[in-house]
Length: 508
Image (tube, rainbow, N blue to C red; front, top):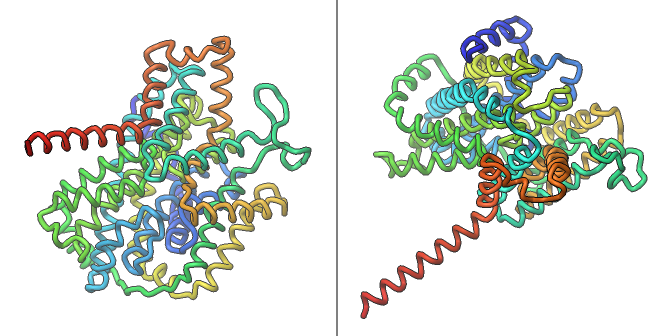
């Protein structure tokens, strides 16, 4: 079945009143999550995850993915009206979005942001539509060594390409690997790191850990900063929308460039935040109005929003085809798929054809629904931010506690959530990234199983990871990514020495 036929099949599955209603609910919840400080897309998806256990997988993933899109849109509202990024990836939007709002152009900035976000997301969905089956077919040739090499590449790319210090990224990953190792060893059946505690026999609950890391940790940091809302008012009318849309085609090159940057950073572990900053820098470098950037230039809103949503959508491509999430939210969704009994990877496209194409089809319709809903509800969600944060914060903590308790109906999980909340707070204060921890917690046991199976096949010989061109190229690429900071530093030092030598020769 071709991609277009599969997409039409997926559309037929989701075009029901129930699924469209779930899209609207998911978008509204997502906007609320994106607007409220202390929450975010990963935590919002984690909070909603326990409520989906009794739902059909297609309905559940539609609800979660639409919450994801809504959270990304919601982050733009606070960035432009209040100069408060609702999402880390919305920071770059504040550079020109808030100055536009201060100039009385809040409605124009919001319309440009939402429209650019929709177009960026659609580019990511097109990539997912036409590349996913090809990547999945290619991955069908993988065995244990190839899968371990892919996992190794994901881990090493996070270390080598992250903006965070490599040592801090490694520390975060080690904690994630330790979390993944708790419980029963899937190969030998032995118990590990349980310390004779019955509640650790089934391992550390991924959902509880994520709720604590993203929700409670963010709330503690926000309370410490003493957040105060001061924002601009916005009223979006059809006249403003059409007038803004008439201006946007002249920025088509910035759109295209930002969408491509977003797709690349979504597929690799760069993520939406890096994509938004990179696209903003490129837009400023190539713009004819570069001197206006930072003062209220509409192109400074278009570029980061396009890249943000393009990267957020593209991050689902490696998750579905290879079982490797490209972002923290994709990692949470990956955990959800496993809980529903689905196994992301190349076999997912064969064994769960309806699920995969129902998800892809919902991404087209869900983003359009998101645009309509967010344009209509901006004043409502902006008014929520006028509620004192001293009232909002306890409500968010209560929602986190309910979400943690509902996983196993256990008060112990609430305590575990608070522990991970404290850990998340320490991570943020000390500058340690949380995304590598989540990645390692989700993929750690799978990577270990693939490695141990590979060692059994080869009688303990590491040469199996170079036994054929495919696994050899993946392993070599992983090692290059791991040592990329050192290679880049060495190349820079060598270039400096050559320049110094050249200057010395010219002086003579």
